[in-house]
Amino acid sequence: MKIYYVDGKFVPADQAVIPVNDLALLRGYGVCDIMRTYRGKPFFLNDHIKRLENSASEIGLSLPWQTREIKNIVLETLHRNTDVDEANIRIIITGGPSSDFFYPQGNPRLIVLVTDMTALPDTWYTKGVKVITHPLERPLPGAKVISYIPAAMALKQAKEQGAIEALYINRNKEALEGTTSNLFAFFGQTLVTPGEGVLKGITRQAILSLAKPLYKTEEKAIPLERLLTASEVFITGTNKGIVPVVQIDAARIGTGTPGVNTTRLMTELEQHTLAFINS
Image (cartoon, rainbow, N blue to C red; front, side, top):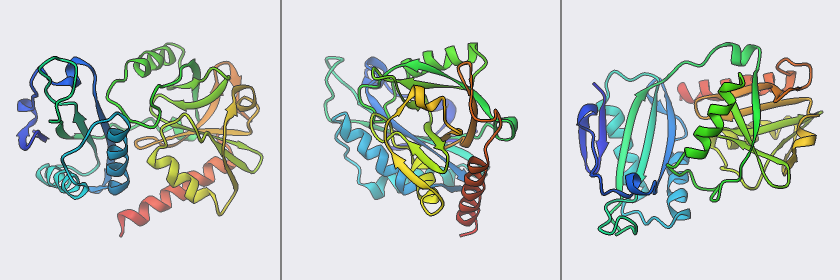
């Protein structure tokens, strides 16, 4: 059985609980982050913890833990799950208890969960995927919060239409990001990703770093009308890596197959990951 860290204690998964007066349950108040491991090593650990702390700051949640404390707790939780090879690590910080069921009282809870990875279909990478568009602007795009109701509803619509993701479209008819992914598009040899109104993912930043020596890169708005004319589109995420997008709603993207530039970046990311594993 997996071992979790919950509010100062390491406990078996079936004993992991928090009180019902926690603002995470009462108001959906809290932040989270997720990373994955390769051969038992957490990928981009420092970057994920930094983003977690930034998310907490965005929603006005003061943290009593130093960065090093959070890192050590994550590593110790991972160490206690001896059967782990490739896994997800979820870090959650709740709003903590509240006597009036509304305002935080300065006692947030830290939770670390280690869970098995779920393998994604090979066809996502070899044939590409379909995504849909969905009108939505998140109120705090820079914070990874625990409330995912809008995302869950959008993703349900996507699955009903045979798609694996929903892209948020703002009031200006610009494509932003997916429910759990960042968006990239190639226009010829120029790689573009939205720079505002999105959660700037850790994998997103890695892709930009890998792409800059190879292509012209731009962080700017992508009107939906222009996105549909892109030569290549792909989405990125911690568990997804790079996933080629070959259809958006009813529109075919490019040739309808994973493009050469996307495939090249997939190889670059794979090599970057292998270097991490072997470091």
